[in-house]
Image 1 (tube, helix red, strand yellow):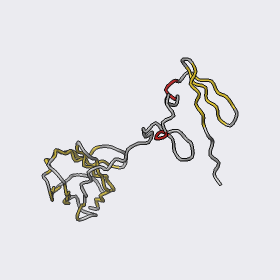
Image 2 (image 1 turned 90 degrees about the vertical axis):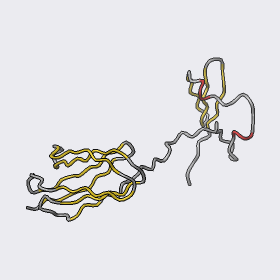
Image 3 (image 1 turned 45 degrees about the horizontal axis):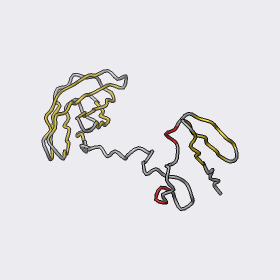
Image 4 (image 1 turned 180 degrees about the vertical axis):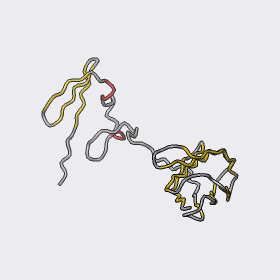
Length: 147
């Protein structure tokens, strides 16, 4: 059974006295003080105080481009497909596993399906990371060059 600790805030002049489980901690943070009124809408049913503001982080749902590469593995000639919800500018990078950029290009993505061809890339055999960066998202996937 999880034990909850009830925090009580007692507003004093220019500071807050925090009382928890019978131990007093004195602090200079008046922002933690409970409201002046005993308005029941600021309290949970178990008596804990809520100021109505969330202290969490809002969920972020990036606009994924649904990247696919074919053929993969390839001989250095391959195609990248992207499905976008809107028109946007993008930068497409290919990095080796050490992080070195081996290819970079700019591409204007249009709404819907997009096809980008990579032909004649002069890169060695190996595993690479292809990344597409837009103002709304950054997506990446692994490609294999097997010459």
